[in-house]
Length: 102
Image (cartoon, rainbow, N blue to C red; front, side):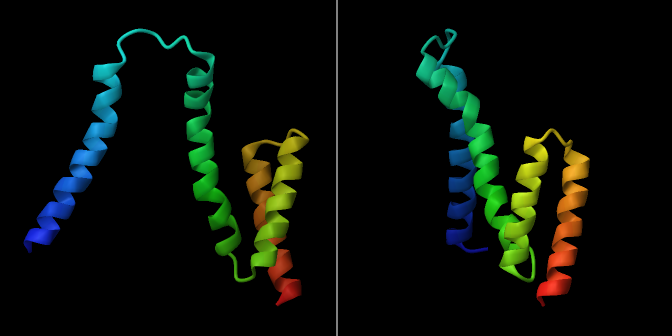
């Protein structure tokens, strides 16, 4: 391995270690600020959405099929459907959309 590889691995290790250790060492009291609490509450949801939404559209043969499935999934979940029925319905919608569109 070259020195560049070792430097890259060490940098990745250091950054991920720093992200996990700094909050434990710097924040010792409970957080009382409403803005910071709200921000920390929504960070996992935003991160998941940023990773998921592009994958929904790009995972299909036709981006239009992904968009249609996304809309159907949002509507079903808005009306109270669970995760498994929404996933099954979205898979069926992508299958049907790609069958009829392509």
